[in-house]
Image (cartoon, rainbow over all chains, first blue to last red; front, side, top):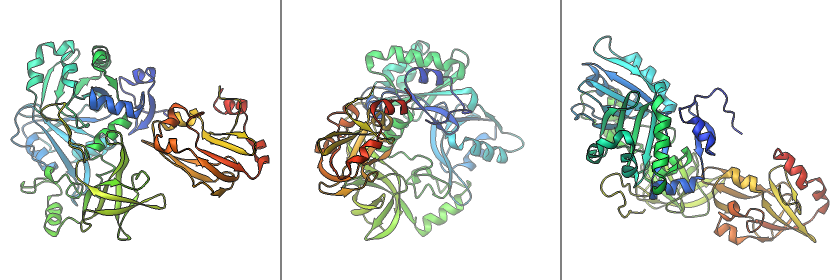
Length: 382
Length: 125
C-alpha cells in the first residue's frame, strides 16, 4: 500500500475514500487513481459523463495594468489582445527552450488573468513567476490551496452542468461558451469560473470553485447525473483519455529537456512575438531543423510499450516512448515516442523489457477529439 | 476466504495439483490489485522451468506484473482463452482465468507453499 501520510488533501478526499477509490500519492496530494476500474471509467467519459477532482492543479491569479504584457513575455503562445473569457493553452519555457510547464491562461478581466499550471510543477512555476514579477503594475495571488477544480467531461456534460441549481439562470451562457472560453459567476461562498476546457478529448467543462463550495457541487452533480450514467473518474482514466487524443502530459511528452517544437505543440509557440523567455533558442531550433519529433506508434507485435522503452529503427536506437498503454477505446497497445526527425513513417521496433517488438507509425491523434461541434459525432480512428 | 483445494505463493500465485500436473493461476487479490488486465503473455508449451522463474507477463492498463512459476517443471498447456480475453483474470481468477498447466519435476516443492489458511493470513485476515 502507498504511504499517504503527510500528503495534501482536497475538499473531496473524504468523499473519494468513502466511495471506494484507490488513493495514491500524486504531486504531493492524496488523489483517487481509480474507483470502479479504469476501463469502466474511461468508457463512462467517452459515452456519458464523468467527474474529475483535479483540485491539485495550481491556480495563480495575476492582476494589474502590467499583467498582460508581463505574462506575454513569460510564455510561448500569444495572450495579448484576447477577448474577455478567452483561454489560451501555452508552454512556459526556460531560456534554452526547455519546457518548465504547459498551462492555461485565462483572461478574466481587462487587467485580471488566471494561470493554471500542473500540480507537480506548481512550486517551480510560482517561484519562477515571483522571481520575475515587476516591482509595480503586476500583482500575483497564488490561490492554489484555496481553489477547488472539478472537471465535468463527456457528451452529456453540458446537460449535467446545466442541472446545477446555481447555474439554473445561466443556461444561455453555458450554451454560448465556445471551446477554450470561460465565464465567471457568483458561487455559494465566492466566485466560480465555468470553463469550456478539458483533458479528455470530449465535450466538457472545468469548474473552478472556492474550496468551501466543492463538496456540495460534487454531490449535486453525482445526484443529478444518475440518469445520465455519471461516474467519478480517477487519475488512471484521466491519463488514458488524454493519451488517446494525444494531449501532452508533463513528465512524459514535455519536460525541461524537451522543447515545445519537438513535443508537437509548435502551434502554441508564436515565434513572431517580439520577445518571450526562450524565443532565441526556439527560433534557432526552428531554423536549424527540429532534431526530434513526437511520433504516434501502434504496437503490432505482442506487448505493451511503456514510458522510457527504447525505439529502434533499422537496429539503431532513435528515441524513446514517452507514454504507452493499452487503448481502452481502440483496444490495442499504442504509444507516443520522441524520435529522431529523420526516422520515416513505417516500421520500427520497440524494446519492451529486453525483447524487440514490432511497431509502426500511425496518424495523430489515435482518436479524434469531439471538443467542438456535435459531442456525439462519429469518430475518426487511427 | 480463498479456495482450500490448492496451494499459494507469497507472490499471489495459486497451484492446484491433480496427479503429477499442477494448474497455475494468480489469486483474485493479485488480479484486483493490478486492476483491469488487458494483456497476458504465457510461456511456450514444452518449455521447462525452475521454481520461481518468471514465465509470463500480466499487464493492466497501468501496471506490469511477472508470473512466477510456483514449482519446477515442464509447461504442458497454456490457457489460450486468457491470452485472447485477459479480462477473464479479473472475472474468474480461480477458475476460467487459470494460466498454465505444469508437469511437476520436483513435487516436494509443494510442501513449502502456503495453504489456504496461511495465504489468508498473508492477506491480513
